[in-house]
Image (cartoon, rainbow, N blue to C red):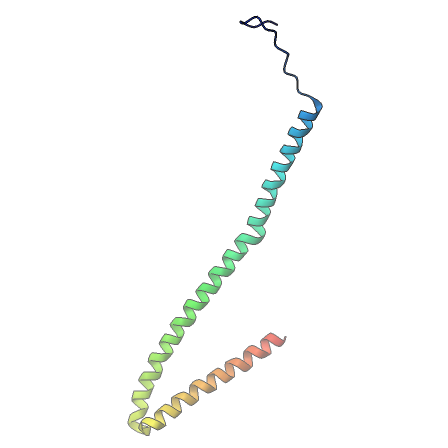
Length: 113
């Protein structure tokens, strides 16, 4: 068919190679989407949950330590009146060390199971 300039255009036909290339590109796009969804669902979201859990645990632990420091200072001031300063320091230090030993033993037993 001649166009306005008088030249004839060759009809645009899709070859088998073009159709196969389009099919392959569609397959690659689909695989990419499936892989992205799988990574998001199976890896990214659980890691986010673990990260939030760890951050919450650290925040709770920091608040606990801060609170224990205030309690220890309060007990130190209270016990210093009865046991003198060195006795109060030994008593509070001993209780804290004993608590850490108990916690460590319990944690080691639970890790060995």
